Length: 358
Image (cartoon, rainbow, N blue to C red; front, side):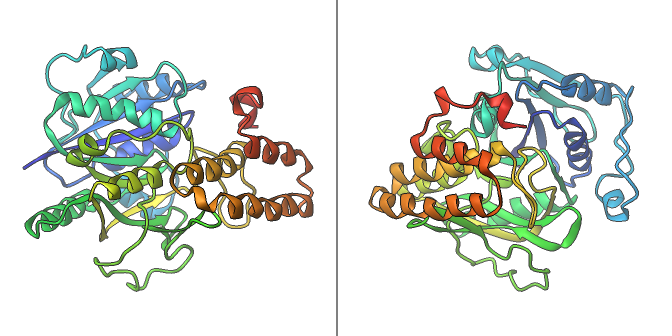
């Protein structure tokens, strides 16, 4: 059976990360390795994750019965782990084999030298995986997700089905639900309007009644919160593009893959629960986005369009009139500077990243 690597990216979110890790240690898949990349957190993430692994800190995840099914009882401690710096991965200073996560035997912990964004942080983990050269797939998960124990095995079963049909599938999506509303779909695949540079998750905010259980459903991209990616795809297409920092990376990856003949697939039996926006400050329905989320959500619409759909640039720029109107209508006058910087791509001379989290 092929080995699978699970990459989880942490940035100032150790509580969510520990809940995610606890759920991964319940997976029923035989051969996998968890690769946890810390994106140079400024809080106590590194210390708390180490203490959790050593058994000196015991997390409490609340009274939700469904959560107890996903992550409880807690994994036995201590849990061994291999610790690397980003430089170790880049310079090939990785000794021996990785640490198998099966049976609670450990994981690999990599510390990035600075905050590299979503693509950059995950790319550190992907470089580690490619250096190991012993896996068929990588499962990229947001740290604010929890997984049902069968979620990965169903994805791999679907991947093998595609292989038997000689289909060149590079990415596979599972079904993602809201963590606090576990029967409500958050998304599993997205559809993209290139003229407005807006993507939407199929089925978002709908209760799941099996209406999206068709494995042959077609969509434009796999959401980055949970995607199974073939290592053959990664070697052929390359790593994630780091020009975005946050958002649009998965759509960029998908389009680059499609240009090289790769398909995307879907496994409705795989179920993930997502605390949408916990790590980046994005909003759920009716809630305000953080400045970080707002800036990159706007800025990258232009970056992505210029790269893939230059003919649509005019309509995308015009759509920002609606963005400006909405900011004024909501009284978000302080956000108008973000809109201007997004339009001018003035990140280098604009907000410092620490201010964007406020």
